[in-house]
Image (cartoon, rainbow, N blue to C red; front, side):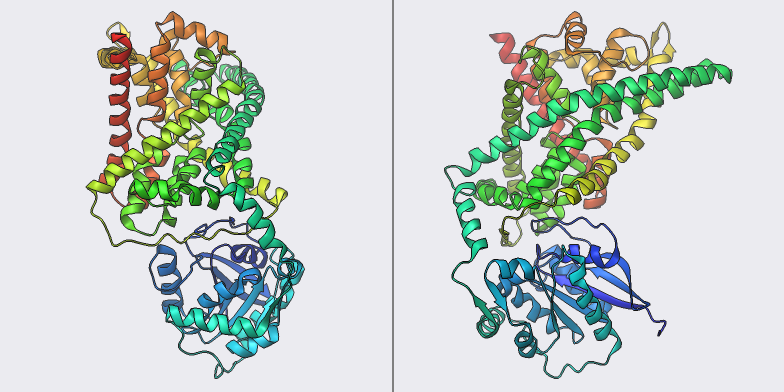
Length: 610
């Protein structure tokens, strides 16, 4: 044992299984996905091979090292500045010629490297046979075949890593200069002709071609996409209702136990109200409302992602986004925003140009996130679907709202593209990967741990202090009325002018930490009981709202403001982190709020005129 800690970099194109190999080597659970740009930061982990410690670095997936994109710049900078002891270039055995061009660029920079032919078992099933010994001879570095989903096949890769790091391998036969993209493609083609043979029956290409003729067709591509999202929303709405009720009942039972505990401890009424009626009640509401929909939506969305379907959405919508002055990859970040806008904003890193990336960040909030779905579903159900929870009508209306939100996003993106300074055009490189059967177990675990728990944790952290503030506003009096009543009275003229009222406007403002608290805030303000209140059913909610002057106009304007108002606190913090600018964070709050107020004012004026 040398005692030295070796550094191994994993490099490769997007969607070659590189991050899966990283997880297998390190035992970590880094998120992998079947679409471009999934890994943007350089991830690190530790592996032990033959008793030695190896630092494994997962470089972002890149198609080139020419620094055209964030991914390419990060990968190139790491290889040039950090000089790892070994670079493992991961290639998709099904698409060797295309991947090999990138490998030649890496080999022009690094003299201690090896090539990993990943997905080799899949390639052989599809009639692609690679002579790994001949390939090694032609490019001058060791080559090993692996299958990322089968950890046993990684033993040979571990042996190779150990050998490259420990031994003084000669690089005399290595291709020294191959950094010209055009020459790279020609050389890759020449190499593949000598070491790759294909059978006449290439199953993956035939299967992918048949599906793509349907899923990427101009005639059927977008309608199928809408149907899939409609099914996704319907399953989320129906499936989340019963778990939410069970969680709510559980938290109510614990709440009474907390009352008993505080009574035994002789806690002051103020402390009991602040901690139980304020903090605990708000937290329990957020968890019971957010957790079930996320636990359904994120796994289903991950299945679409892992199957290779999401890149087809971007492909279908690329021309539409191009005419709107936006980047084609923005469609992917918008889809991510349906789960969580903070995740959607983070996902904007996959967009190469700064201007295009900024447009995607500033407009992502127009896509209603998981926290706003309960509000929309409740209003649709009680005002427009006859109280039938989970009906097809509810799902169809929700899909229509998503379409309107998407159109609104494109309109605002077009306006921003005119205002913001145009950069040099950046090409939209989007690989359409082969369709693969999702790994159900891994998908469920990953979506729950990496997404559901992560997003819920951030919401809980924001909701706890919000609950305290809300309770204080509802239980602190100035004169004869509470602070909350002062606030709602102040905003009431403005709210009624745009089809709402002061209570609704105040609820949106106080709901800044978490959208899930908006409806409970409205109920609390109307009932004047000083405690966030849940409703036992949609009929009860309809009764409360109707008694306080709600009409169809109020419901429509409420839905408009639900999708068109400032982002939640978690998303705002994410925008500040991603852009590094307080100004852009404030702009991301101002744009949707201004649009929402304007649309509500127009709808209210037209409705009253009619």
